[in-house]
Structures are given as C-alpha cells and as structure tokens.
Length: 145
Image 1 (spheres, rainbow, N blue to C red):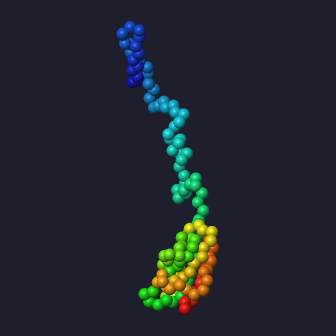
Image 2 (image 1 turned 135 degrees about the vertical axis):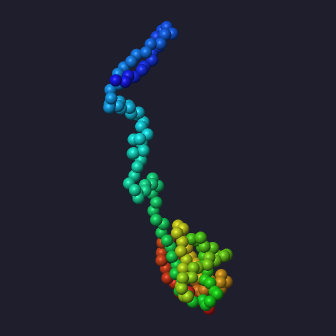
C-alpha cells in the first residue's frame, strides 16, 4: 500500500519522517470557505432571457402632431412655438410621410406648449396659436392665406 510522507521538525535540527497509510479510492473532501466563490456565482445566475434592473424605467409618453396639408413638391412644413423644445426664432422641420401628411413627435416632458405651422419656415399659417398637451395625439389641418 502506498504511504504518505510527512516531515516534521523536532527541537534539535534532526528531521524525522513519519509514514501514514493512504486508503485507495477514497478522497478527502476539501473544507469549504465561508465566502465561497462558487456559491456567489450560483446565487447571481438568472434565467436566460430575463434581465433585472434596480432602476425603474417607465416608458416615456410620446406627443404626436399630425398635420394634413399638401404644400406642393419641394416645399416643407415647419413648426415654431414655445415649450416642448420649440422656439419662435427657428422652426423644426416636420417629417413628410405622405403627399399631404406631416408629423412631429417628441418624448420630451413638458407642461405647456403652443405652436404654429409654417411653409418653408417662412410663411405662417393664418389664425391664432394652437396648444398641445404632453402625451397628446393631435390631427390638424392648417389654413394659409
């Protein structure tokens, strides 16, 4: 039977060798540390496809203005106003989705917003300013004189 060799030192400088028998087929289990890396990794595993986050995210409300107006080829509609990222000095070009439909969308959070539609950021529509609230979906047809 093979034996395990253990060296021990005595008070004098002599070294004594102590032989202890080793049992075949039996392995001694290693003691687990208190802060085991394996248990930490196992605890952090999640089901596939699931994600967790400590920050709560709420979907932002989208405000959408749909303007129905055919302004002709090579002309664009713009929006000027106050609030929701708009200003009265420079217009924001609307997105053309069909010959007579233009849209403006924003996810910015705002309290009050008023606007006017312009052709080529130059010619204002007739009438008073219009109001739109956060999260609204408005369809509008302007009048130009």
